[in-house]
Length: 84
Image (cartoon, rainbow, N blue to C red; front, side, top):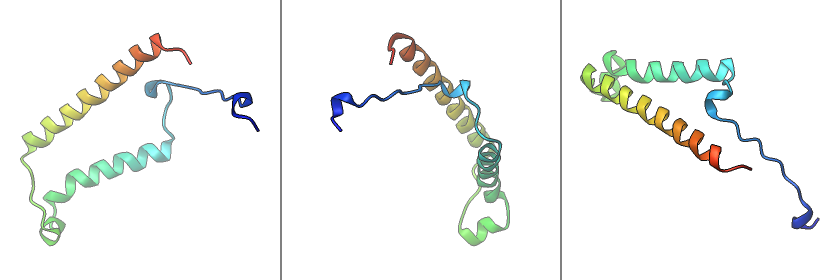
C-alpha cells in the first residue's frame, strides 16, 4: 500500500467535550485520594513518608487546577485556528 493513497481521518475532541468512563474516573479519584491521605496514616511511618503541611497541598492542588485549565484553553485556541 502506498503512503500517499492511505487516508486517515483524525477526530480531535477537546478533553472537556468528552467525558471519561465511570471506572476510569473512579480509579483516578481513588488514586488521588489515597495519595493525599497516606502521609497522615500509620502506613506513612512504615514507608518513611512525612506529611506535608495542608497549606502546601492546597496550593499544589490550585497550581495543578490552573495548569489544566490553561492547557485546555490553549488547546481550544490552537484548534480554532488549525483545522485537520
